[in-house]
Length: 357
Image 1 (tube, rainbow, N blue to C red):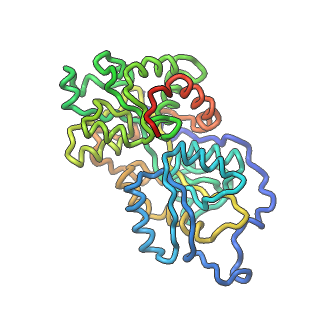
Image 2: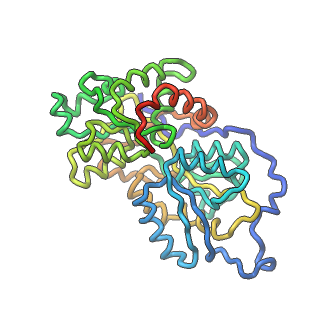
Image 3: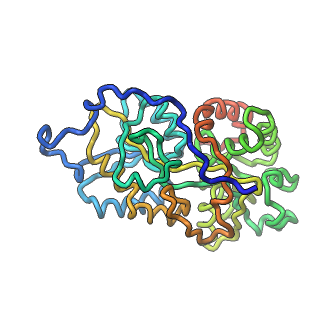
């Protein structure tokens, strides 16, 4: 059955009454004539991959040379934990390219400042906060995929066509031959685990039973969404449970891998942006968020994640099929609401094979 991509994203919590909003708004020109939105210094927390952060910021710095961007880059789980730990004394001005399911958690804690960046009307309603002034705005979508080293797979007497579904990952030949992202530290890991729990039936033990069987074939859980794909490309594992573009990049680098989407459908999440609630909002942070959904920025995202939140993707170079058709009916609000319990259960059951941080 074809999976619906445009499943509504329902808010996790009722909207908070934003008392004192005026006190959190940027100073006017009269109040602080030296503060301008195209100059200043901001701190941006991001879970985007290191190499593409550098690529994107090079363009931003050309467009806005007078804004200094201090970047803190970690995997999604670590960024989320860091932001929650800093709730009472926020350091970040902006969250950029971090899982929407994580931003829903922050929103439920009243940590996000409502802000409608220029061009927000171009973002599809399903891919931004449903509040009248959005608290988060999506930029692109990424999904579960298997990155398979065909040379190493053939040594096991298997072909890529033998690994078409989640159930195929349970084959005895693959014992100790699979690397997967750790959901506690990686957004890719969380979307894969939460996707499986939904596919097997929310609130049932079937998903955990499957993950237990898969655990028998896992070599290790790593703290990065792209690392399993890179390890497959390098021949360090046979199958890396990662995301589609990470595998496409390995193919473009000439490595002997194929990208396989599980037949049952792929878990997915949005990379999204938000303005952190602080006593004083830096206008340069708002300028950054304006740029971060601009046509210039979207064209950069499309080079790495072809499924864009403005619906203007559609160029799926390197993919054998349309990845949009692959996405499950995903309840992101359920993921956010149950995030802690999912991670606690997963850690209790499976953390023994996690790679050192």
